[in-house]
Image 1: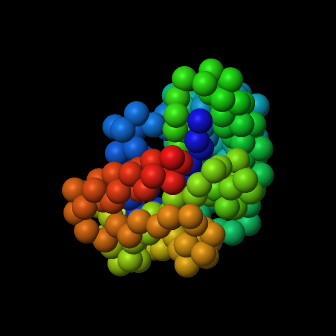
Image 2 (image 1 turned 60 degrees about the vertical axis):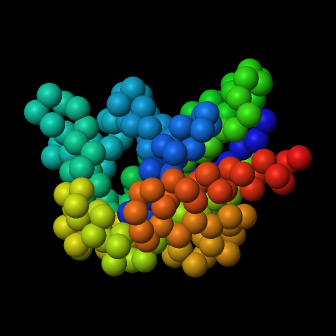
Length: 200
């Protein structure tokens, strides 16, 4: 069994790369999905978020409005640190428990931890290899704006993570994703072929 840490900043196409890895039978563990589970299924976490950020982060039905929370947190370093201190510890416990469960099952050859903050969380040592997806900043901002963020919000989210150059320096393999989806898919397949040769 092999664990791949897949990381990259917002707008790089990291999640699309994860989808292509999944198409090749990899098991994907999403940091975003783990975060969603934590805030939606652990009532105490939602209460802490409301206490810190106010009732405005809730929809009319009482569910968390993640876009609203994000717009508040990513615009202020102190608010972001508060958000991270609440969500990240239970999120990492959930991810670690899931990884351990999959290891015991021994059914899958490749597990991919798809998370933007692999280095910031200090979990790179969970992984056998680190794959970093990068893209030019102008392309990243354009992609994020097409998903509904303003230019300022996109810049704030990029600035909230360590720079691409630092991630690249820590990576085992880097994919530049400045072009078409088909090009990214081919690069992901090339990465998997390289892994197969390395592990033989």
